[in-house]
Image (cartoon, rainbow, N blue to C red; front, top):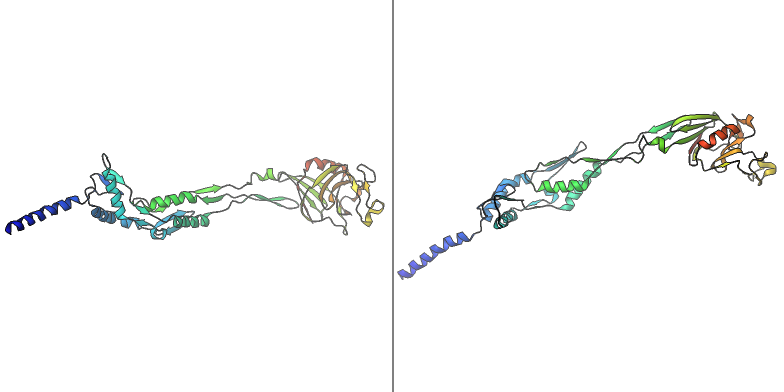
Length: 327
């Protein structure tokens, strides 16, 4: 009986160190997230990694851009720091042949959709659309509204940066992304090319002004519509042009014997002398044989010029030129 008891104790004594020796330990020269876990069991390594990094990884993250700050906690981004998997990752790395030290990244995860939503919110708040330069056409001058650059955030790049910072306990928790400059389609410098020619017709002062590259080029005296047939006001453009145009007399009493008739271009009976620059609804700029009417309200809506003046104006004004008519 005594011999049997001694044999049992001896066997039990031998089993205890054998079981401890079987517990896996991380190889020498292995660290995780910069923390040495060499020789530790998985449980010991998990505890050490928690103590070393949990507080740092739990700190809020903030994005500073365009003079604004956007703070958020890792938990709001679905961030998880798994110390057990981090320890297992270190253990697996140590089992592979290596020389020197091996450092593995911590095992962390986050919700990509939540990160993308966080970044999209920042991008929307800091973006600024570019403003095209434009002209403000007035009868006697051309005003300018300057262009302005816009700005935009590279949301994809920022999302990647957020993901990297979340899992790196040594990383600064403040992100400072650069904004991209968004150029306008029309710059202030490009206005002169975009608006090479502008015509304004000042009915009250019987003047046609020609602007080239936003600067006053020439001024002509004109006649405009009678009170009963006023020249229309508004912003239009030169729709068509013709040399010695034919005149299709309208179906109106004032057309007299020419009513509904077509008078050939160049005819002495044609009131549209020399040149025609059509604007809208049969109204246009043309030469007149009644030069004494210049400087008065004399036409049936058209803008009259002397023949020399309309010939001078004609090549200077391409189709599509903006035309402002006002009082």
